[in-house]
Length: 347
Image 1: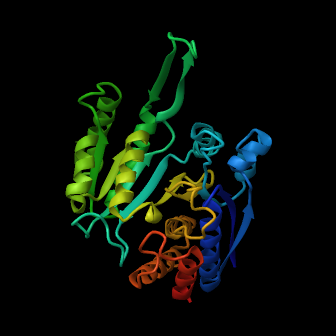
Image 2 (image 1 turned 120 degrees about the vertical axis):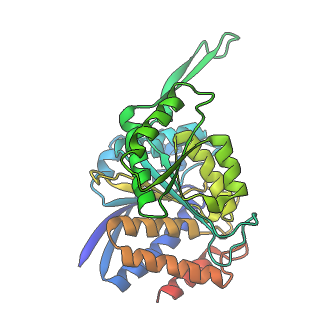
Image 3 (image 1 turned 135 degrees about the vertical axis):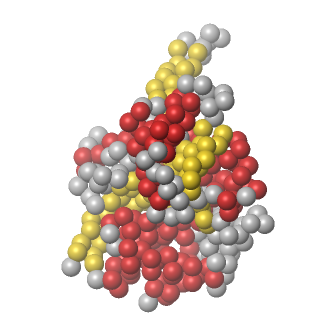
């Protein structure tokens, strides 16, 4: 029997609830499909930061390196720990240390879920560059607290980084409907984004079977709302991809359905899977968090591990539950009721 070791980082707020719900679903799927999952839970979170002064221990990256994959719930407690501290203390170090340069976020309506748009038949796969660009962390502040204070934030775009995320997007498009949208703002950012456009044109010659269109980010944002069915695979930089995928979450019914995967494509280190939503501390004690985004992320994890039949079955179970109206409206169903419905559809 194959066995996979999974690092579980529930994090803060509703992260604990949705991680537990997802683990129940994944263990059921593993049992049904003849493989084993071994989970090891780590308490790394904003609470951990309050107790220790760090979001994770100094050897946290080395600890995670031995796992097959990482499942993360949600991190954040802005009333106690600034988001800039929690993000740069846990998520970004993991993504960068394990070269998880491809952030994958699917956007489509599940059965029974009503989105805010007239369009329903869309299926968009957003590929976000995940380790450099606008979130490189290069910069600083000087003369803090004075009238002469200066803040500098430098975006870093490397040829290797841009080329590898674009190639990843081309390959995804080739396996789907063979349409790629490359997103920049090259009319205003005449160095980094023109650089991105140049590399897009260069690589397009290697993929003559893929239809490539370059969009400015504002035009693509409008297209996601006005004509989402016209899009297939979207590739964007770290910042633009982050913003566009929140639009994607909105048109698919909300953050409760927004899954993501942080992928190391060459599998030299573990990949990490997490919902897009935050920790929602205001509802963390109510038991009404929607676990579907995390369950969907868990299905992406199974697919990445090679358990494609189990991954497909988990998504079928999620769709069976939402088709019955379970988990389709925020706050209508309790977390455990949604979980039970998905598990029942699995068995």
